Image 1 (cartoon, helix red, strand yellow):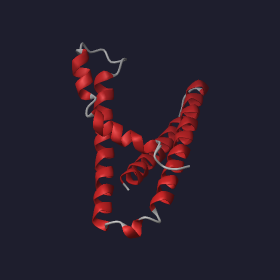
Image 2 (cartoon, helix red, strand yellow):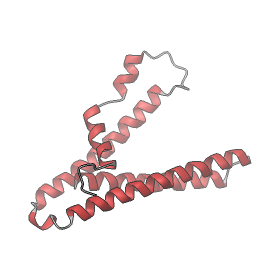
Image 3 (tube, helix red, strand yellow):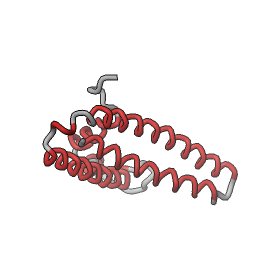
Length: 136
């Protein structure tokens, strides 16, 4: 259920990004810029499809097992998934802001690496995208 919640949050974010990309394409000044936004939307839609397949697989796996599981533990797993996803977005945003190669600051590489956060949390969240432990 942890991963189901992580994927739900990722899918919500993906929908938001697709909407923003579509809006940017509609208001693009040049045809080249419009095409870049259309390409971005296409990539986001492909990513969304993969996330939805992973979520469906997890839900299909969990559905027959839910009645036998502790509802409190399921709720805890879902809260942890939502919390970890939110924290991973904060880490990603901080990392992008501090480590952007286009940024013209004189930061030390160690400061950049420190902003990229909890590797265990990021690994746990990203493992939900491809639940390899599920049977096909």
